[in-house]
Length: 113
Image (cartoon, rainbow, N blue to C red; front, side, top):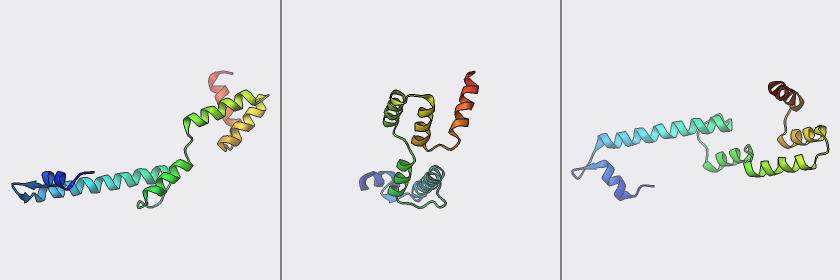
């Protein structure tokens, strides 16, 4: 975050406020706010753009898997399942996937099995 001194260096010229620079900074800020809001709405499936950061963070955390934990969980499933059928069920339940069997068939088709 910029300090008051930093802002003075940016928006003052010859001891006076440089209105052109102030408008440029405000335009940059407005652009950033609009673009960031669009990203939040896209990834969080939100209909409006004004949300507290905690709301966005919560939605993203609820809908994102931690890579290391997921890898460990899937590795455990592979080790512990006694059949492909059991593994499919575990993976389907873990990832809450509808149509998991058709997805497996598509993967097999693509790799030529």
